Amino acid sequence: MTAFPRTLLVAAAFALSTLSIAGHAQAPAPARSSATAAQGKGVVSSADPRATAAGQEILRKGGSAADAAMAMMLALTVVEPQSSGIGGGGLLLHHDAATGTLATIDGREMAPASASEALLLGADGKPLPFIDAFQGGRSVGVPGNIRLMAMTHARWGKLPWADLFAPAIRLADEGFEVSDVLAGTLKRLAPIWSRFPDARGIYWNATGPKAAGERVTNPALAELLRAVAKGGPDAFYTGKHGQALVDAVSKASVNPAKMTLADLAAYTAKERPAVCSRYRGYKVCGMGPPSSGATTVQQILGMLQPHDIAGMGKDDPKTWHLIGEAMQLAYADREQYLGDPDFVSVPVNGLLDPAYVASRAATIDPAKALGRYEAGTPPGAEPRTAAISSEVAGTTHFVAVDGAGNVVSMTSTVEGPFGSQLIANGYFLNNEL
Image (cartoon, rainbow, N blue to C red):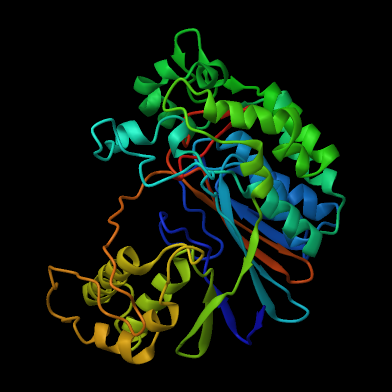
């Protein structure tokens, strides 16, 4: 953990998600919602008002920021299944108000032991088209959010573990109204859901995808949440519920893949070092690899530092030109060098080296666009082929602050809309691989 005065927390942005700053949700929602839990006792913000209400409820009970954030993560599993949930993974930042320390937890999904370089190749040995690759079992990694939740609660939780599940269980049991965003995503994915009867059984009516305002109940998810509330995280990864997850992947009618209970047992969430740099009078800190959030945001800020952005102001087109150019250059580096540090070398120090950032900034012409944006060569970087990615309308972000001033900022995802489209125990499994 690292302590810094005057610290700005950069949200835990994923390697395949857009950037965000603490307090703003990434995914669109019925109405972005933030609210104080009680005067002087904290604030919560998420992409869905039902999840925000869950965070408020926990803070009012005396819960910590960590408790409130975990309750929102569970509630979003129910009401925002297209974007996030316990079938996916997350990255979390925790600021301790008393000590000034910042800790980060990596709860990203992990590939099963059976995964190989051929996992997403077709019979002809060529990469599957994305439309084929993301559907079904081959794209599913072992979900990490429940292990992340357990680590978070053990370190910073105040309320009993089971209390954090109550709002999500109510939503799953009693039902919730389909939001405009959920309805639109259901309609968009409808053409491929002829292959996914379990998903249709929850989110469709007799004529097709449920429309905005229609009601969804999810008894299977409620049952699972009760089991995990009572039995702890092992109830998710072992026993009948763990086996249901394994079966959903290995017995999928679409792209079945080998996943085992041993894969689930081997999963652990990990504390990672925060990544920090200076921007004018501040230390800016965020989630390090496997997230690309901190390095990319901090590179952008570093390239803008020579320019009088405040003086030009938000209404000057030159401001946005400079920001856009810095973003393009930072994203070129992101695509080439960011990855999982357990498997590849990520040149974090090189990417944020002041001389290197200054050399990148020097390529920006204040009067015109570069037009071509290539990765640079930061100190310590190994030669690598860029992995060009397209952004998808998945992922969510939420923030909780308690009365003591502790802050949790978390990004959670199932990757693309509804992840792999596979259902286990009432929740969608990710398509992170």
